[in-house]
Image 1 (tube, rainbow, N blue to C red):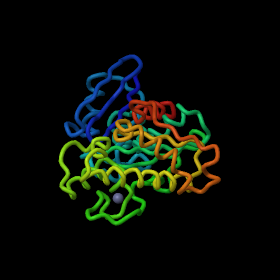
Image 2 (tube, rainbow, N blue to C red):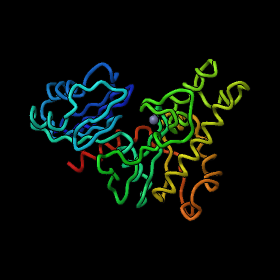
Image 3 (cartoon, helix red, strand yellow):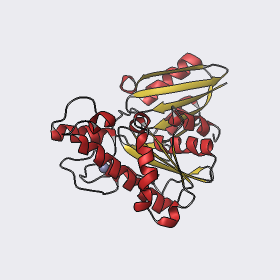
Image 4 (cartoon, rainbow, N blue to C red):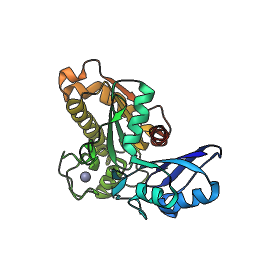
Length: 276
Ligand SMILES: [Zn+2]
């Protein structure tokens, strides 16, 4: 018998099969549907006794309810895996999976993880349990209103934190201001015409972090995602200035750390396998 963990992101689908059969790899997310991928894995590897999926979109009770960046062939994926193959499956939002893995890594009672990649997201874990909200939409810091921008977010609004403190936000500002080259924060800081994009990123990130700290009172706040991993200095900036914005008592004994994990979402999916 084998167990399958999957991280389905906007660009890559990564997987790891452990147990009797072992395999791992990554394929472009747009090259398959999740239902099609599971069918192929069952066909290729036979006995799979549990599947866990980290998914870059909104998920509730085993159903994909919103997927802005990924084509979904089987939204009711949990029911699909059980009806077609008799395999129990658990699926969670990717930030929730990342936060779960971070909470095990940092070993604290209450963990918040803020990830800035294409989007800006947050996952919360208390005593090893993901804080879901009633429809599993808790912690969507990227879409909390911040400042009006001259373009719109993927969610339809024009004032989200995500428009300032994410990779897609940086690219939108570069296009708006006519900045060329790679959307890299350290490069933008050296460019007189475009350096304010990096400054806006820093300010939005620390305010978003202060909002999370004030609302949820985490013991450890972990920063990850592609933009943070390429620019670890932004975590130092948050450490130095969060007290200007967050409730003072919430900052007492607060740990602020950069993620040490390469793929926390996949690690979180592997942890979900233990709950099936
Ligand atoms: Zn938004």
